[in-house]
Image (tube, rainbow, N blue to C red):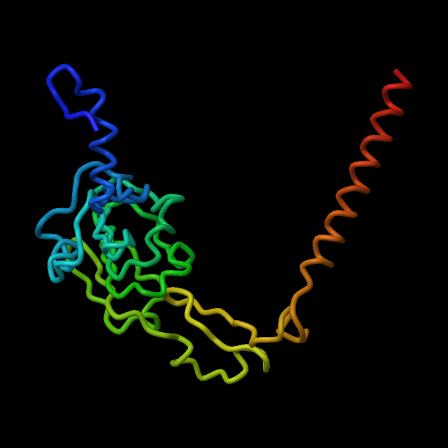
Length: 229
């Protein structure tokens, strides 16, 4: 292998990259889009920053607190002029703490947090209610400039309706104030009444035949129009 000498830097770059790879040097994490949706970084005094600094395994990058695998554990989008969290917000479903204060958000955010089952602390603008209301959180604290929702409740444990899910299904949390019914193994379909595995072959067979029939019908129709013209 040729040594790197002045005037031969270009030939050394591939060797250097290979050496770094061989030594196990990790590449920088690719940040999820939601982390860079707003300019700037997390303020040191924010609740997200304080949570992230509790463990050396967590890292602050842009507006996110990430673990070593790149999963979002904290998201700070305060003061970003957001009317809604945006289409990339679902990337933060693994977060345990989210700060959305100082934004002109709409008041009803229940469906926005669909799937956010790990969320334990949510900071909202003062005029925005906690999703799911008091039944979805252990405590809701109102301050002059924000509302803080803490301790997401598992509504499956707190509901008194024994018939909430069908006989062959079980209740599972699905975010603040939300729940879902999951079919037991071996059951599927409406109210989990169908037994056996779902036939993908039959599904795609019906879908394929339907698509083919529609395509033939459109082709015949277009041919007739072409002859008529």
